[in-house]
Image 1: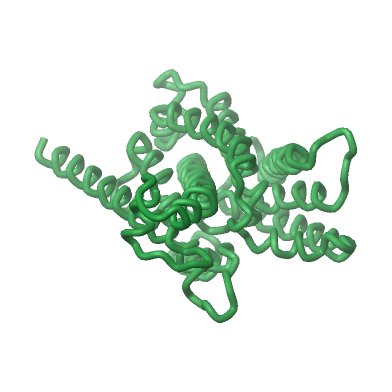
Image 2: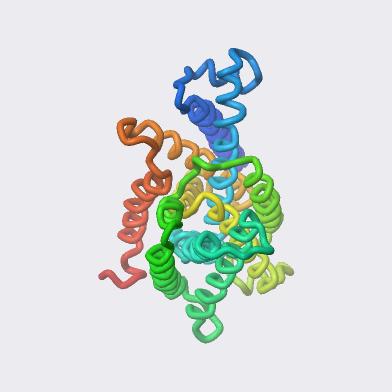
Length: 341
């Protein structure tokens, strides 16, 4: 009883810290514009208090970017938490399993070629989702050995397929002509061009995927104990696994469709939160959602203040600079399992 109470207090503390972190970096991010604003000016302008210029900068220019950052970070955070639980491996994430590269290929095709009867605003997310789903089933099929999916094989298949798809994106970039700069900038991850029109497309897709994943958290807990144990508890393992994989692909594709490749959010955030809160997915999945939004908000703020002399750094570079060393750290910790020794 005492241990359970301590665990609830720890979970509540983490939630409070995550919300505080999200709020602080939201306001800090709102201050970043061509006219620098103070923390208090940005905060009050958010509620329509202050000069007209400040209100326009915060509500019309910066707020869409902040909302998109929250959506994308939340989507990548919860997708990473689900994949780590589903494959019982802390190194599983949409980026490592090649899903981000798959979505990138679809978006790059949409940016390079135009279809007259389909608006580009819809074509890019549609192609990103189709290629993301295709990548998921390709990686899953390649790594399936004798009816099982070993995690190491899955990771290697994800890395290999992701590298191949990245090469195809590079080929399209080479052939893109006038679209070259747009594709290159897109592949670095860029939140600057977020608009309310983009958000109206992305938000329902991410909300639907997140609701499905959180609703399956109890089943996911049972599946983490093993397939046979989950079956004994009445969980339809193949059906739930497929639902969770489709939901993960959906939110990943929606997240990267308009802002480009932003890696390592789904790797770093869920793993740290699992250490702090424990493995119960009923608490971990919502926390990863908030934590992903907070982390990406922090990275976006860093990308705007780290080098004022060269302008805004693409946020994907910042997440990679933080996430790649953390991935190497995880590999070193699990080197026995991946054959390093």
